[in-house]
Length: 265
Image (tube, rainbow, N blue to C red; front, side, top):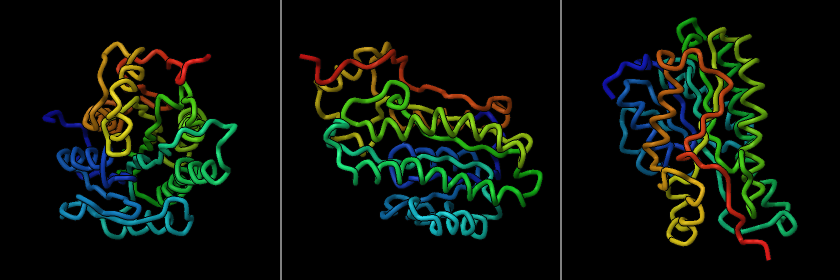
């Protein structure tokens, strides 16, 4: 991207950065000359080859691990994080209607997809309090939501509930709270539909499923990780989006809803 987005030297932390949207975002922010810290859970993957990126392992479900992540990011990458991109998440592939879902699945999905973002945002805001003016001027939290958070998703209510909480609970709440710490701080959510990532690869092999998934999508395509990463960069930019906060930005090809699946008898 040739346009100066005002992200040169800005410290960006991307969670769930070992693959898919996260890894694409890492590479894009590197191109934009940001200082990138990449979080991963268990497998570092392609991040290991990126010598200009600080890669840090953390369990987002664990309070001490998350606090350490923000502290280590500041120590190893030139100071406090300015832009937090909450990208990590799990989507259990088994179909489990609420009536049949095990409590352990529900609790683990919310621990990763909702408690993790809470812990990350809390640790980020605490470190932001003591940051200098330049860090605060670029302050931004970006959640990666989902069309599931808007329309729901039958047999994946745990995932849908966690994403809806980010989009419609934390985003509007935090956009009002962050300005008490960083007066120009912003909070937004970028919400994809189906994206061709490793997490979705098995599901997207089913052509009939893809046809149903795109039935209400005018652009008739599954997004690429680059489609989403570029939108994240635009929202992170204080130049392009400095007056945008509290927004849910749907990056879904114009999706209007979901077909019932399986159909009602």
